[in-house]
Amino acid sequence: MAVLDIAGLDLTIHGAPILKGISLAVGEGEVLGLVGESGSGKSLTALSVMRLLPRGAKAAGSILFDGADILARSEREMRGLRGRQIGMVFQEPMTALNPLKTIGEQAAEGFRLHLGLSRREAAARAERILERVGLPAAEVPPDRYPHELSGGQRQRVVIAMAVALSPRLVIADEPTTALDVTTQAQILALLRELVAENRSSLLLITHDLAVIGAMADRVAVMQRGAVVEAGPAAGFFGAMRHPYSRALLAASRHVPRRTTPPAAPEPLLQVEGLVRDYVTPRGNPFRAAPRKRAVDGVSFAIGRGESVGLVGESGSGKSTVARATLALEAPQGGAIRLGGRDVAALSGEELRFFRRRVQMVFQDPYGSFDPRHKAGRIVAEPLRLMGEVSDRAGRIAQALREVGLDPSDADKYPHEFSGGQRQRLAIARALITRPDLIVLDEPVSALDVTIRAQVLDLLADLQSRLGLAYLFISHDLAVVRAITDRVLVMWRGRVVEQGPTGQVLDDPRHSYTQELVAASLHLADAMGRRGAGGHDGQRRET
Image (cartoon, rainbow, N blue to C red):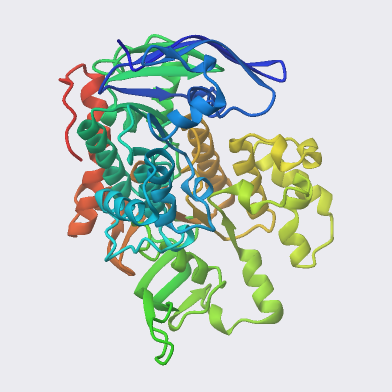
């Protein structure tokens, strides 16, 4: 008998149909991969199993867990199931965790509520489960708060909470989105190990086919609230029949057409020996606060029309380099020059002119927009900050057209756009000042594969037409390979390897680069083996 058996599940929210006849089953110790784009209904399927649906939602059909229908259970019975028998790893750990409680308190909560342990006993068990997921107390004390951890560490805390009580079923909703490749590999290996150890079943929700290829025993593809194709993972990618499934696979392999840059492009940005330190919390109030070197002697250059990738794990210094490049943080050593001018020496009108030439596209456009402002004001914000008022409406319309949006979209609010459209708005905002260089911080990491392909095509087209230079920060080596001419690999604040993108990724010399490439290629290799029908059902360690 299946641990989870969903049959004919229909879901409406305020009368609008969302899920249509969903039928899925997860056997004991099995990993079912549920794949599809945003809005396909994956997360609402998971929330239906947890009975954590929004107001106005009505579910029909059956969701059998160990033979009993979840839809017929009372809320009190569901509270007994959640965490104890069904654990969930939510997509965004920062919003899933309570910012006012330490990670130790949150990890101990399940032991106290479900097992009735004392605070001391629960804290001891919490410390052990945190150590089990790679967060030993000596390195990551349980009294730390979520904001004091990296993204990968927060994800480990959420996983610890989900598996603490050895539940029969674990639901993981996009557990590796926006994580660097080495952390992603570690999280996937950890999930696989914990599921095997507890003989749990795993419902793995993701839009990343490579993750499905590395993890799943069976695959189900969702589109517009319905399952359009399902089958064993072995051979699935090579035998897809539904057009939507095949479109997802094609988009995951998409490489944009790019214009080859000049062999010796005109110099635009030079970074020489960049150093940046941060003050860390002091352990002794009578001693000077210790300092951490985030960037240590980084040097590189970007030519006009050139695209340079910056890769490395969380904490390697990529974002610090980006902030310094944008003159948001002053270097404490070295120099940054744009067009030969020292950025640190700029002020007043010269600094405003610099900001006109260098713009930024953030990882999460929705978080960088003011939800109270319409798209037109958001796109025109750089003009307002620089005091430019001439033909603002015309420039907004032009920027929107350049990214494939309609000028009438200027009257919409951010929530009225899809994720891909919001990313286009972010690019339009960066374009409106006609910059020479755009810094792109993980611009496609959280996008579905089809939307990612569209945005990469857009970036390649804009670069070709407008002669833009890009500093492209990403953890996805496939994306870096597709969109950049050269790549820099950062590790512990230093650039350990750089060169032409194909050369560095195909023949890495530094051990850390080799580790990055190996972690990335393992997933692609797993998907390729299964697409050829050669997977034997055994999941390898990452």
